[in-house]
Each structure stands twice: as C-alpha cells, then as structure tokens.
Amino acid sequence: MKIAILGGDGFVGWPTSLHLSDQGHEIHIIDNLSRRWIDTELGVQSLTPMDSIQERTRIWHQETGKRIHFHLIDLAKDYDVLKNWLAEHKPDAIVHFAEQRAAPYSMKSDRHKNYTVNNNVSATHNLLNAMVEIGLDAHLVHLGTMGVYGYSTVGAAIPEGYLPVGIETMTGDTVNQEILYPANPGSIYHMTKCLDQLLFQFYAKNDQLRITDLHQGIVWGTHTEQTRRHEQLINRFDYDGDYGTVLNRFLIQSAIGYPLTVHGTGGQTRAFIHIQDSVRCIELALADAPAAGDRVKIFNQVTETHRVRDLAELVAKLTGGEIVNLPNPRKEAAENDLIVDREQFIKLGLKPITLAEGLLEEVIEVAKKYAYRVDRSRVPASSAWTKEIAQTVDTDP
Ligand code: USQ
Image (cartoon, rainbow, N blue to C red; front, side, top):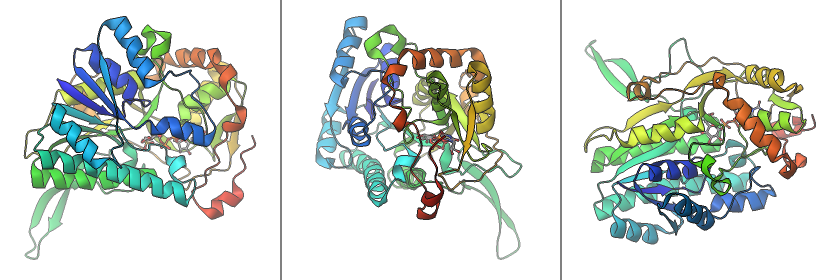
C-alpha cells in the first residue's frame, strides 16, 4: 500500500514508519516538525540523540534499500498544500498522528491551550475535509487516546468505543442503541481527542469515509525491531515534566539517581502498551479496514493496566531508586480502578508484550547510556491544571 504517515517524525510515528516500510509499504511521512520546535521552546531535548528526519530516512535507505519519503507540510495551517498533496499522491491509507499529544503541555498557559485546540482540531478537520473534497477513498487510521473515556470504571469494563444503552420510549418500550462511550476528558489535550471523535462520526456518516480510531494507553519503551538496527534510527525518548510519560520517566529517573516522582498517593490506574505493540497494532488496524458506510471502527490499544504507585515500587525494586510523593499538579482522581476491553486486537493476532518480559531493563540501559544528556532541572512536572493548584505545586523532590 501507499501509506501517508502524518506526524511520522514523532515518538510513535517514526517507529511506525519504519515498521510499515519494512513490510514493503510505500511510506510518505508528512510532518511540520513541530515536536522539534517544542523541544526548543521548552529548552529540553530527547534523552536519545535524534538526527534530522532527512538523515534518519537516508540511514534507513542505506540499511535496507527502502525509501521513506518526507514532506514538510503543516496540516493545521496549509490546507491547500495538504489537499493538493493528497490529490497528487492518492495514498491507499493515512495514519494520523499529527497532533500535540502532551496533556501537561496543553495545560501550561492560555496560549498552550489555544495552540493545542487550534492545531489538533484544525489538523483533523482539514484532513477529513480535503479527503471528501478530492474524493479520496483512503482508510484513515487515527491515533486517539484512552483518555477520551476518563479513567473510572463503574464495575464494568470500558468497551471499545461504543456503549449499549436501553432507552425508554414514550410508550414504555425499550429501544436498544449503541452510542459513543460518554466523553470525559481530563485535559485540554484529551478534550481535543474527544472533539476528533465527533468529527470522525460525522464524516463517516455524511461522506462514508472509512475511519479507524485507536484509543491508545500510555506508551512505554523506546526501541522497536527496526530502531535497533542502527544508532541513527534511534527513537526519541522524552523525560521532561511535560512530554515524558510516567513509566519512562520513572525508568530514567532511577537511572540518574533522581527520586521517582509519584503524583499524590500514586493511586491513579492507567492503561499501558509497549512501543513495539503500538506499531504492531497500527499494522493490524490497517489490514482490517471498515467498509464505506460503516460506523467508525474503534479499538482500545492497550495491553495492561497498572497503578502508578505499583509501577514506582516495581522500578524502585529493580533499581534501588527512592520514591517521593509530590503534590499532584493535575486535577484527576487520586485513586481509580480501570478495566478495559481489548479483545479486538487479540482476535486479530496481537500477542501482548507485558512489563514482565524483561524490556524494562532495556529501557534502563538506554537511560543509563544517555544519562549524560539529561538536564535535571527539566525533570519536575510543573504545568498545573488550575491557577489554584499552581499555588500548591512543589516540584522539588
Ligand atoms: N504521573 C506521576 N508522575 C510523573 C508523571 C505522571 O505520578 O512523573 C501520573 C499522572 O499524574 C497521571 C499518570 O501518571 O495520573 C499518567 O501520566 P502520563 O504523563 O504518563 O500520561 P498522560 O498525561 O495521560 O498522557 C500520555 C500521553 C498521551 C496519551 C495518554 C494515554 O502523553 O499522548 O494520549 O498518555 S492515556 O493516559 O491512556 O489517556
């Protein structure tokens, strides 16, 4: 297939591009390189030394003989450029990662809230609008988030997108329907993913676009089979308070002798997936496209759930690290349970990689190798969810 990977320079986008290229697909990365600009804005860099996108694709060609094409396009701002590119190249499938993906970054200030909403909603809408305008029947696979559901389970598992409900009619009969699981975002970033869901629902219904939405959990790990092949194919690894995600943060913190920064009691339960499974799920979703006229296909892209304090204890036991409980900069439930349905990918053949499989050590090794690149002053999470919470945030462990 000819596949356009929007946001193919990012943390999941890059290994996905390599994985799909390795399988023989023709890959076109479309990216505005905003993630690299945000590093500059925040004064932080990936733990792992990343080359330019052009250099990365050159090395991939050198190692495999396969070409990954790169196109510098801003989806949110360059509507006509995007539309003309799609009309000219007519990809069979589009994987859409091209959104600002950090919850803390989206809550940093009013400017960051505006940026996240304008960028994410415009990017998604421009894409859908352009597809309809040029009559492009490509399968669109979008990287969404588990955070659209909120994280509380009311005794029952969170289904894969749709909730069966019985509605009582005026005549006393019960009509059964499946509705989108109620959106319950916990940050501006997560809210944009809820808005994406409505855009998808409309365009699938009105224009018969074929859309798959992947509700992914927190990704951990850094290497995939392809990024291990050459030092210059290495994936990015975020450790800072805005972009670093919890398990990868604990692993790098332990590698540099920094206390493991548990927010509050660490009673938050979240869904997780290893980066290798993440790219495999995208491959599986691409091969299982909905038909024109179908409703949006939704998968929960998750392999296991864990409580934050349990992860901290696990990492501390493995590495001898110290745990510190800090005031939580976020507005979120202090404790929650989470049960998630994830049968669809298992049925399609996913064999989940779990924390138990030795890959935690691999991340610790990567973290130790590049520990000299860490700026300890960028480790604390300082973006507060409200002005009141900002008064209480104490980032000093
Ligand atoms: N947390 C800590 N200590 C830290 C960092 C985080 O205790 O040093 C806690 C947070 O308070 C939160 C949990 O860990 O309760 C998860 O935080 P996170 O930064 O790992 O994940 P989150 O902000 O939810 O966002 C990440 C990705 C996002 C993706 C989402 C999936 O950045 O792109 O959509 O995970 S999910 O969490 O399932 O919504």
